[in-house]
View 1 (spheres, helix red, strand yellow):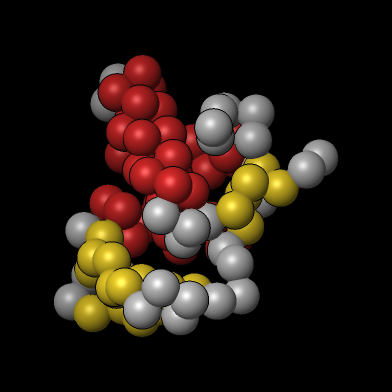
View 2: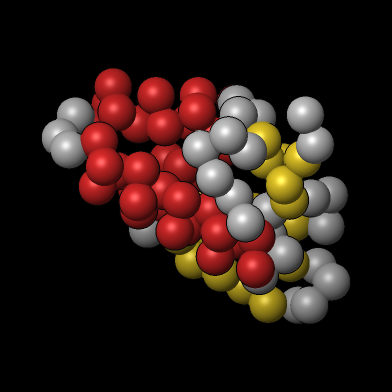
Length: 93
């Protein structure tokens, strides 16, 4: 389970492309596509820039403002769903 203390990475078997503000993910192993809306697309982009979930959350708080608890809950929910679907990996350290 991904938490605020986790580090994440994108597995090599995941292909993706950005279309009209959304991101389409494709798992080469399962053959299944997965669509991220604009907010999910931003979280995906941040996963490429930062390994640490804390850094991803810090950037989201800065960009979106608003209630941090709400942003954190939504971000962790998406990251854990991506983990369950083998679209994201949790890293050690």
